[in-house]
Length: 620
Image (cartoon, rainbow, N blue to C red; front, side):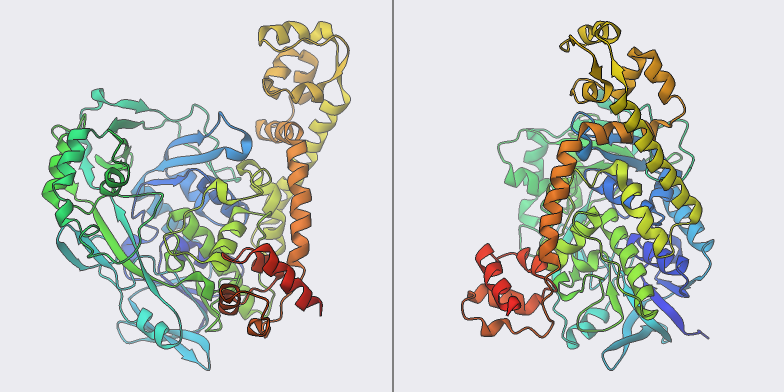
């Protein structure tokens, strides 16, 4: 019934979809197995993509040839560039999406991708032979063979849903959990643990009074996520902001004795940076109110997502608390919030390619590795798909460094440090964030994507043209000069110090209160010289000139740190024989088996003196 596939991808969430698309576009014959063909790429939690650091990841996925940026642009109902008041390293694109359109566009793109087959069934186990993944066993009893398997099971592995004192098996609302895979992997030597996440109630938007809330419109200019020419919406839907109150908190507290989190019925640790509303009012008791974002689920639905009100309290407590939120006095609830507890596998058991150490040709991506968030899952899926394809073709793995991409930071963090709580990406996790901006992901990563067979020649050509044009603009700015008589009126107008002698245009741009577009308006000749360049290219050149000193500093630091990455540690290295290492260092190094001295230096609990000791022994 089934041919042998190159790669079987288990699960069709964000990680699974990107894994299937990447491997197929590189030439592998892929089977995407999902429990429900109607929920491919479903946005299980909030209907949004991007945000702080997450927006950078989506742009990196797009630059590498993934689909998430394209789908986000095609299903967008609102766009905002966050942190515009800060430097460009902090700018982060975020979109509200039409939940149904998002899933439909993903499925449409996958169905148009040659080499992707689909099958609706539950995967109950893996075919393993001599320590190598050889396929899957399904709930209907089929054994389907493949050369590699990518597991992207999300929250479905032994998932348990909690609402107050009620709990039942489930991987998502109205969908059953998956059993068998965890048990088999543990029997094969894997370590597993439990994590928790949650979601807020869904509300009937017709029952809300928006006149009592603060409107949050989208940006006038929609930058979007994809570097391709995907169409953007001609209009946008607003989100709204309201707040909880002390009265709401007091109502919520009446359910604390029946809370699965406080009563100890949930063993898994939840996301620290996206806590439930009961966790927030418990941890931040001094706060009289908490902000809530009222987010529409799409163009043609009245369903509303209450961002900031994730909860697993009893339904009647949720309802009573919601009724006391400003604008929610007559609220109608579509479904209550809930918590879900599920199995994951500590990611220190993975190689940098996301292939597992215990089983060859078996790859993990997404929440199975302890992450939370669509974007974190999608980028892991992309890299797992790329590396699964390359592994079965006998090619070297593609591993992104910490100074090359947020994706590289995420995977390095997971493998070097592990995680005991749902891992979420932040700009603060990246030490090279001036290099890893959302505006330059195409310049950083398209060449690699083209080299491995994902980005098209046309796309590579556009990037080369952009690089050339950026250099042309920088040359114009660094070689042209401005007379005091040409610019002082403008400088006085913006309260910037006037110049007394001729000055290079690029030097003026170094002032924090001057932007290139405004400067061009004040200097007709400069405006004429820049007229043939795109707005995106002009912005890129401006950023590179303004932040050149900081960019060069980070490049120097990255170069110095990369020297540690060149010091390889043999897989058979015996840390136990180094008595000068502390017990904790020996235990962690033995368990994680870092491939380089650089990776060893980033393991939690490994200090600089441990690194020096290792350097001496490796030198010997």
